View 1 (cartoon, one colour):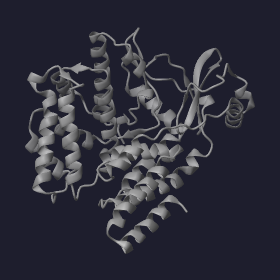
View 2 (tube, one colour):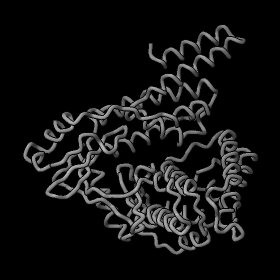
View 3 (cartoon, rainbow, N blue to C red):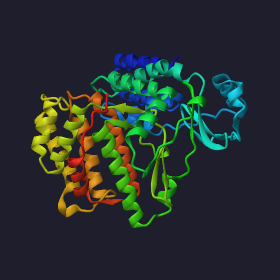
View 4 (tube, helix red, strand yellow):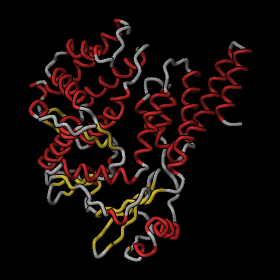
Length: 419
């Protein structure tokens, strides 16, 4: 019997028996869900990780914890299978031009793996999608949707997780379309012209819907660079690259790579450049939304929590029927965010444990208190991006002049590029 069916049978039996049996059943149901969710692979595994971030206020903390701990232990494809896929996708003639193909992948994840090679003397990175991943997205996410719904019923949570899972499905379908990713890369190359950012070049002749060939870009993994304990001046420069890129993507251009996984970046300490990788999870945002987000951010940074609260209710990001307690909690959270740009707090330390603990506590309390507000679909992946980049700066122990960031945010020109 499938896990979902088992859980529902247990629920009916517990309600008939009543009493202490309900508590025992809750425990068995949780164990059953944890066991099943912990076995998610491929698209479902990645979707589960995303759901843990985007719907943390709808799911029980135990389920969120398990989803966040999902690990991709998919065995990578052997070299013979890689060559067979390349031959079928590119043709035998083009395969003949691919030399020095690495025996093992240099990177592997839930959707595909990357091999290093050489084409006409130029080092390249070839991303090969696992067979069947794209076709399984709908069925994988249908399972995840059912599990999430059952988890909500078990713990008496209200709300509808389906729209969030649907948005995740749209994002995953973009990620498995390597032609679309190639288009995203070219768009980024045309927009982000600052030489401080390195964006790979696409090899169109050696790319298909499920094979993407790019120039191989050297760099140090972010975790490794952080572990090297770089000097304060280097940390400051790196932080400026991250924050300027964030403003360019989210405000200036509205073209946002929404997967902030550390593995999607490399750093070149020798020439102080940031390498950007993996543009599958790229979303476009309209001028009106970017204008609103800039206005609200600047108001929050200026300590205008009342104004921001009024505007987010007006925009539909907080339901007007929420309790006075929720309204007060939101105002307090906005005031805490405003501390980022207070003069006395500069340069602001991103590894600020008291402040972070307050944010975490307030955010959790707010998530548990809301009754009518669902996570806004248009902000889902922007929150993911912001959280990931903040986490990067925190791990680096960056100290940033946020007043200068505020000025940069105020002065940047919003361009008509997001769709």
